[in-house]
Length: 214
Image (tube, rainbow, N blue to C red; front, side, top):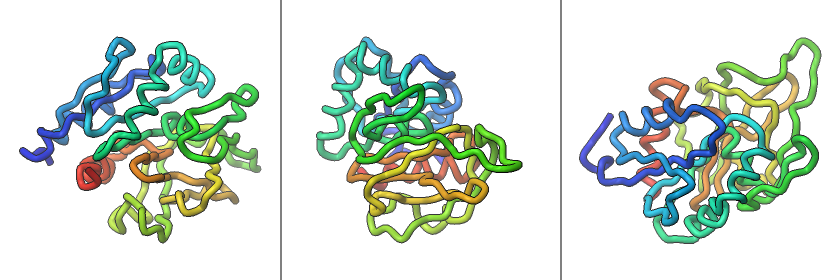
């Protein structure tokens, strides 16, 4: 899947110190992106695509972003032309205004809405772990094309995003009797609740398709 056009694209993965970055780094590197881990010492984000990953606590992640000045660098990055911020799992949740995890915690505020806990249902286990279908929404700004519709992707989460504006929802996923937002887009800010890097060939194709948005 690698190509000469991809290896000219600089892609940075923000290190939140919360999870092993090997799988997302390896996926992006193998696709062909010029991939780099972004630690707290890097002050200037000279990337075409910035990935905000994460599995873990919303409160811990925001504390780390605030304490190390990373929040401000992300906010500066998204206002530059021809840049993409792509967020995965906890990373997608961090895009929102607040989360109710461990009491209300303020997020990056890039997308209006709140992160809520999955509702307990009979015979349904929380966290939601494993493979589930995504249903792509009819959205003109959707970054997910029809080839990704009704296909299975890998999830692991106990909280979900509830965007204020339905026009920013790119896909939804069923969890028992409820449906939650599983992908989102606002301008150059994108997110998936599922893990493309752990979702096989289709997930890699999704990561590779980000280049078309630049």
